[in-house]
Figure 1 (spheres, rainbow, N blue to C red):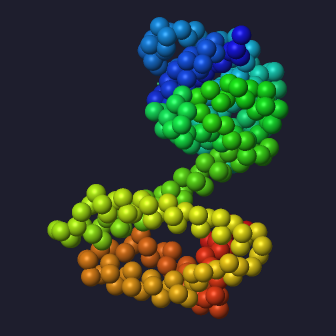
Figure 2: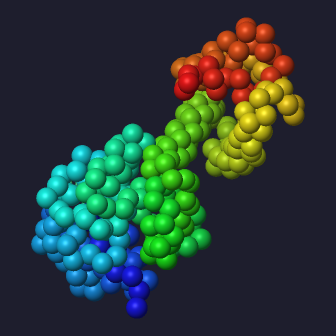
Figure 3: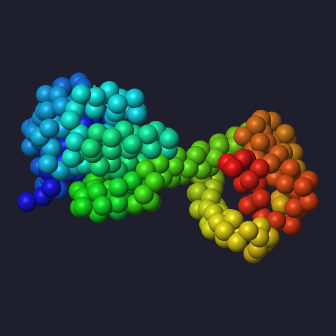
Length: 290
Ligand code: NDP
């Protein structure tokens, strides 16, 4: 028979996870602060617990948390007996919160794995939609429960530092935020044009961004090798010159360039330091992070 799962938190994401474990025939115990949300899942075969303490006490498999934030994890686990339990925290938080939570759990005799979910609820339990979860922390816990963890979505272990799942999660989402800023600026540029097909423009835009995403590999090679000119085909001097045309075009189209300017300033600063022959890797250290 399959490993039982205990799940605390039945928001949009928790409910999707619950359904995926039920579909994969894992015995499931659920608890939610607002008890009404357990109703439909009970009808679908889940057991319900009246309190977090009761849910944790009866757990023989992983105890999964999918709550709003780290503070709610603290509130919910307060007063539960975690000794000997396997805790898997899928609540979004910062790397520091994950590290503290790992220590907190270990002090209470639990093993701890942190997760960062790279999916939206409709992707959960649907292989092929591209959703997965970053995990970090206790490697043995991850290996032991891999079957459970892979039922709702792919599972990607990124190291024993419990902060690294959150760091990967937030880093990828931060990069996505920059991409959204770029897409927003691009649509603003074409906005004044009456005779421009937005649908076709969107297709070209998405394809271009896909092609350019591979520059992450070039940047990694430069950062690892320490030579920021390695393999450079578009250097900073050329790019900063093109930036002038980007800004002039924004002005022609009456578009506020605020989403582009901060990064362009960084590129210009690196060129001013005498590194016009480099690629973009040299701008990384200008942001700090030492
Ligand atoms: P929801 O807002 O739908 O649900 C929040 C859940 O947290 C509910 O079960 C809520 O209980 C519970 N909760 C909030 N505060 C407390 C508290 N103080 N004590 C006890 N329970 C509390 O969020 P989601 O389910 O969408 O998200 C859950 C986690 O998953 C978050 O960390 C989110 O960042 C992450 N995630 C979500 C994604 C998404 O697209 N939805 C994508 C990737 C990650 P109640 O029902 O009583 O309000």
